[in-house]
Length: 179
Image (tube, rainbow, N blue to C red; front, side):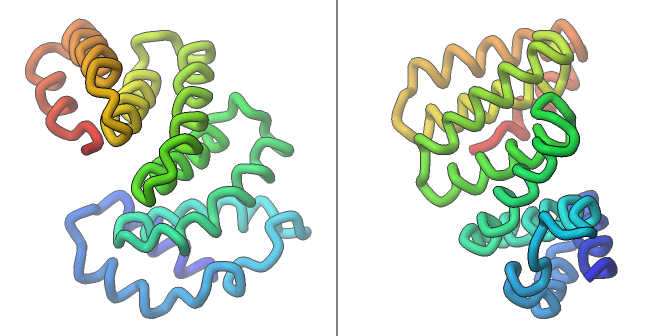
């Protein structure tokens, strides 16, 4: 279980390893059976592993499997680390992404708003994590056909990235914004 999660973590960092990522899927049994109860004695390790494996499922478009992993991990992280902790927020962001990808836009929107507001409070309005969460919310709005709201947020994000990172990096970030 630890090896699979570590391999998944590495794969998330190396998105271009599509063949290896797909090979890993064969070795990941059903998520619930693999990780059991997050609230158990080894909850911290499991809460770390769930998002790593979930992100691989998510990258392969296997949202149901991905969705099984994030909520329990998020709940454990909220209980142990608090809602403002970066690990908790990242689990929330990935669950929102999974919801967005599977067409559950209202649930995605709620998590996107909460993550964006928390990042803004904790890190400030122009921190890269805050801006990424804002871009995620724009993607959720766009998925719902809310073009004006999405465009407004996207323009704010690109302008802020230009101020914070410079024009060249802002263009690179803008091209990587969620579809």
